[in-house]
Length: 59
Image (cartoon, rainbow, N blue to C red; front, top):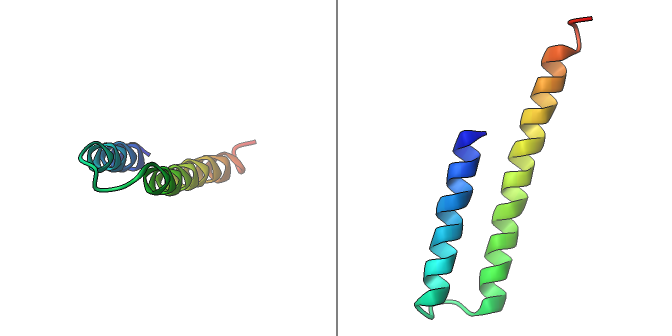
């Protein structure tokens, strides 16, 4: 999960930098950020699923 968070933060920094330099407009920046948020959400759900699977046979 730490890797997914690091990738998200690095990607978000890139988007903000590109926006600040005028390389992308606000709509494009939000679109990229939305995609990165989806990737982070998917990673979090995968971790939750793996943790649930690990605990399933512990009862």
